[in-house]
Length: 365
Ligand code: F6P
View (tube, rainbow, N blue to C red):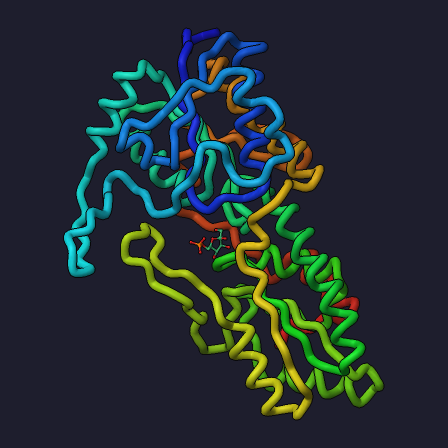
């Protein structure tokens, strides 16, 4: 090893997703089995660093967790130690920079590096630790698949599988009742989940944030299908979809979160508009956190294992401030600080969009 790293911390930050435990398992097992590294599990993301909550992960801690959903470490999507929200009563919140406290805890435990498993919010926080001299190796996680620098994040394929299954089930009941049925999928500002699940299930209309829709075009398409004898339509809508010139539908603002906007509610808005304009009964289903739970699909288990192993391997080779990524078929790495705060959205010229259009899918344009 170029640098004799012997003890590392691992944390899971941001919204959870299937495959987190598979990464933790790969990190711990390859650290112990191959690299003689000691791994400490930091609890509840960066909050565990603030509150000095961490514990040693031995071989048995990493056993029997490959297929387990969630994260054995706990996670947190509201924690940036440079802007730690402290409640002051009466709903008031004060923000404090508690980075020094975290760094004291890192040094007191003798942690020489952190493996941070998360999305863009987690990488943004990790970048701030890098600037303070803490070596961080990132592992790209999120169902949204929107982390800049990698072609795919783990968790995405599992969310697509859930979305596809839901759309398939909604398809049959839509056909029986001659209804328009809308399924609202997660993804924040990126339409990857809706695009993939929509394509996989043959949704008639796919609405994504990257291609603002015209509601009249959506209604014309649904009515045209009906006139041709297809008396139902299936719509996959991203939670972040918006009309041309319109705004995303916000479910909640959480001022204690570094990313305070929680999207949600577009399906209800669309259902009312479509039913009013076409006269066809229109119903909706919001999948929500169902997409984040449960066991990872095989592809995510494999990817998570590759990412977790690569993080330890690269650390042992002296890597500093790198994000493990997948480019094409290759597991490689890139500058972690460059990825922070950037979202990988769908290019409207993406080949999948072209393929979808060519098989008759409407994007409401
Ligand atoms: O980033 C993952 C994600 O599930 C998004 O798709 C969604 O917009 C958001 O997190 C929901 O966050 P929360 O769990 O705080 O409601």
